[in-house]
Length: 348
Image (cartoon, rainbow, N blue to C red; front, side):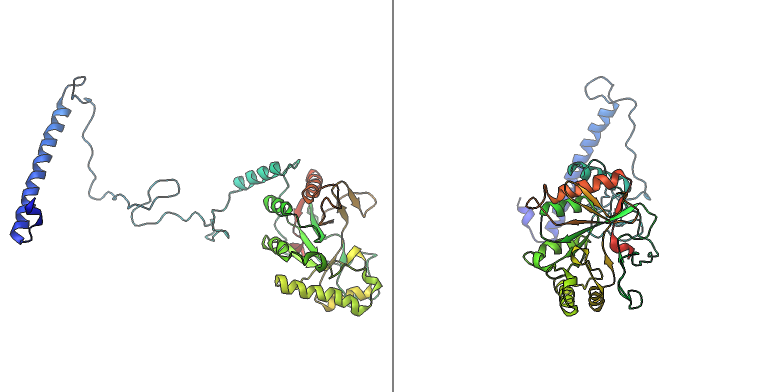
């Protein structure tokens, strides 16, 4: 034991030689024992299988085992000197926004099926087609014009987006009800919708609609106080509309391009005021959905491609159910009729 702590060079050499001899002796004994075992008779103690051959040695040009920490996603090791593939990148090389591995089409469908079951839908919502490369031309619906509408360059008022695709657009007004379950449901189902907000009912919880905005939902103008605009002067209407534009910019960083007049009522001053505030479109609606029924603008009570559907932020205090109940009624009907829900802003 004293040799271990010696510091002179000769002593260290003697120690190494002594240890080396010991190791060689141990290896020799092990080799002899191994030879005896392989040479023994099968079926006797110490005997090996007669079919067993020697363990093949690695050739000089065979790749060495990779270092620890270079396993591929399936658990195998990657070749030495290389990194395992990045599972968070799409086939085109871009990275998934949330850093997770992007879902395949099969995984996405399975997730939609699970979400539909979780929220007790009758059918799995249909996936909308990609947004069109060329946006459709939006014009004012016949009978919805005001005097000098086209000559003055006023925003178009419409109830349907011109398209042959079997899609509809869900829009929800005011912001009075702030149901967390509604946000979870829409995020889970990945159903797009557009919100038209009034400041007097959202100001107690701006954060609720910020969470909505972060999921990709468009937030737009429904005036400050939800007044009947045709009864107001031009300046007062401008205050209601432009004032809400200011609130939206301050709270959510954008001045909306879409405006919906309360109750769907407007006059020429309404559209003039809206244009002065930066509004480009005035979408109304062709159907309205409630918890327990639908209402229709058209006489035949049918949903058409490109129709805009209206609902409201309401709960049990005013409805016979919750917002998830309303969404369930909406999705069950449009899905049964072969319609997918698309994002309105993608077509404007």
